[in-house]
Length: 620
Ligand SMILES: Cc1ncc(C[n+]2csc(CCOP(=O)(O)OP(=O)(O)O)c2C)c(N)n1
Image (cartoon, rainbow, N blue to C red; front, side):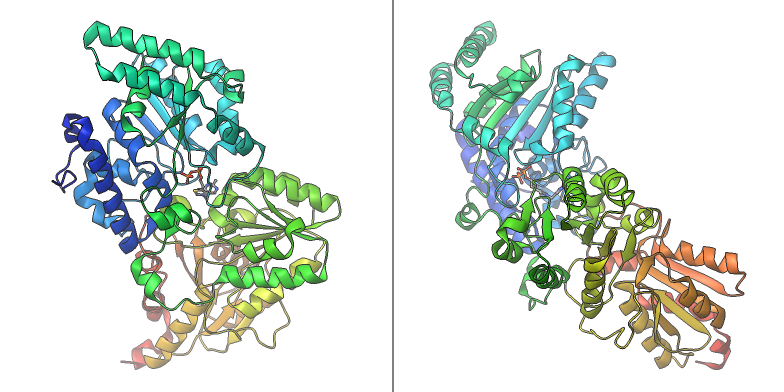
């Protein structure tokens, strides 16, 4: 019998017999695996959270109660069981179900996420709002063990006591970040997880469940278990010390036990943290075996394509070479060693590799300290996660003019992870930070050149590069020593300026223009985004009556604005068109679809510029 069909509703879950729930869990897993294999997405975390989600949804009202997920990549079972099974095949596709909780998508999604460690702060906010508004629903923060070590989560844990509110924290402890988790807190959790108290509680729960009474008798029975939990489950731990009641560890795959624990927690009038042990990738042997590999999977179409060498691989290969020549070079990552491809560096230079866990702010200040102490730190970070460490970049690194290199991966549009993961802000804010030099390579040769420059620089350098494979063209700036603005193709009447990936789009515009009998535009690689190469720039602006700037970044604060300011300040009589991402949150879709949405295509740029070209009248 199939339970999880397209019409499955949350109400159906409440009617199910407990004995049928393991079969439902199997169907949820099967659906998650099938969909992720096809569309790509996060796999291991969702597979590990199936039973906990079923129990949560049987004991809490997902609309009235506020369940706040951390990161949000474990919500596929939650989405399937909250009336979205019929649309689940569209997961992460354009206009489809988002891979993370989205308030606009369902009344059951209470807080948008994508970045980690926000759940306790947000849930605490919800709890306090409830108290102040005189409401009485439950608030649950659902967090992973690796997310818990971020400073933001610690700040929230510290604050809980002061708020004197009722809050339930579900700690889904699968012992893994993307890679194995790191640090002293991980060791403490491991010690708690190994505690044998759970077995004693389990037998108490089993005893109670044998003849579960109704009404007041149930309440008395629960109180009895509660007393046993308080008596039994008390290994010393930081949570109790922070006045957050710690209960656990429990088996997060035992649905009746999870339900009972949730029911108990609902009756508790103080903050409580429920510690569940789970297995990342549960139910899929290869994912259980290798949770790092199966944390996230590419869409089938991408997986079947021949694997191109990626920007991340190229960047880490150059770093290894530079580190071989300079023993002061150290590499830092915040739990993203696989994503930024630092595994080989870690093997080659174990003493000079630092995975700090999900702790971006700490990582940057640590790098600043290392640089002040005489080392040459190279920080590898996704553009979107650098947002977590803006003050550290500014206050600790840039203002002290320290020689830290920021290798900003996944800069630009990132595709199906959606709005929380786009790397569109780094250009705007990094252009405003003093002492910082900012570069965007358009090909591997440029990347190498920029990294060599950064290695020798006595100040902070940021190099942004995109997600995915390197371009086939690798000689764009051949013969040009300058890391500033370089004209790479000659032209008349119009010049197209870009940086990074857009340089290739502009070369395509040039080809299309030639095919259409239009004058060929000059193509210019801006290369250094800050400080702008004003000398070369002014010379180019002065030669062409039409200038177009294209960048895979927000238009607000982008390089296009800097060019506009330059044109205005120098009184250059030229017309400017800018192409980039407008003032919107960019939803999940493929990168080509996202480019299409915002006009970052050769076709659109040509169409937009065409009316300004004087020869247009002569051409077909
Ligand atoms: C601020 C931030 N840094 C990095 C990431 C990338 N990231 C996504 S999931 C993850 C690991 C999360 O581990 P955990 O909280 O234990 O949850 P699990 O995946 O094990 O369920 C990381 C590092 C992120 N989403 N947000």
